[in-house]
Image 1 (cartoon, rainbow, N blue to C red):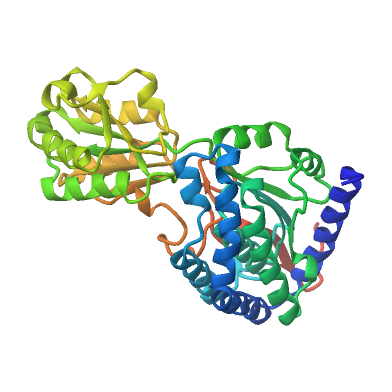
Image 2 (cartoon, helix red, strand yellow):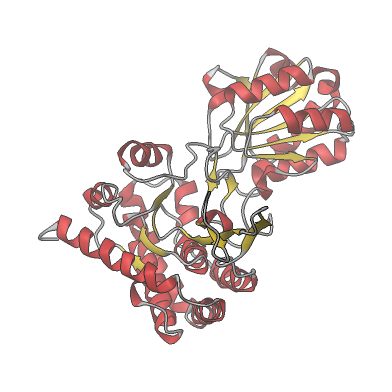
Length: 419
């Protein structure tokens, strides 16, 4: 780009204008765009896969890990999943204009709290081209224009998907600039846009910890973020062995390179001889490296010695830290010390223990007798999710459509004046 600042300013200004138009678009029009986008994704699945192979072929040049390459890959199943996610978002209730609450004051004023769009969202992400469609679907459904900045490793795939979304927007008579993908991979473009709060209302970074920390440090507008996903499964003394094995194996092995995969396993000392050995053997059989304390290594000699750093690490691969705890109190303390406030699970038949775990573990999602892998928007019934927030202010946990909105107060009177 000959003048990067001018380019970024133009993109941001066009997004601001588009947001104004989108705020007036009805639910039927946005639903038409979503369904048309889904249909085009299905129709052009083979072409998308071919384009994606260009990105996969260049992945080694960027030094991507196996987990990162997996996130980059667009299989026929993932393309179908993208289309399905858009159709599910289309079926969600229209958020804009919803009356969140309403009351009549003693003087007759009717005070309504009404859901409205945020405006323009700057979404930054890495390696996962399916996120292009899913993020755009949530933003536009919630009446927001979105500026997308994918990683250079997925440029061909993201461009192809963005072109489909633009074509569908034209068919549905939505503003052409409702969804914009940055055409430059220059890192300075991110810094430039992060300094434009007059045009951009919210930034959402989704990727590695270094990216998110950079955005949080530089952004002049609010940021929805989580830095890491060190998720725990705690096997309480009363845990059912079959359930424990099933949940831990799923939480760790179903897909390792995602933020809600389990990275740490805690086992109550009273059940270590049975639960740990059984679950540990199941993980070892799936080629998961165990890093544990002395008791873990005594019961499972194949385990390697864990360092203090291991208990705070998000591996995103075939490694899990394992620790024996003497009590529920110690498990909660360990999670709140080493965890990332993302997703943590307890397996127990003790309702009192479950309630204490849910109340005292300070995470955005707490699972009781369920895998950590459920903590994303689709599995919570939110439709596609644009990210998971470990913050506590504006949004927390999976961010779906409602998290992409704000509200205003609308007051109806009959000539009242304040005395």
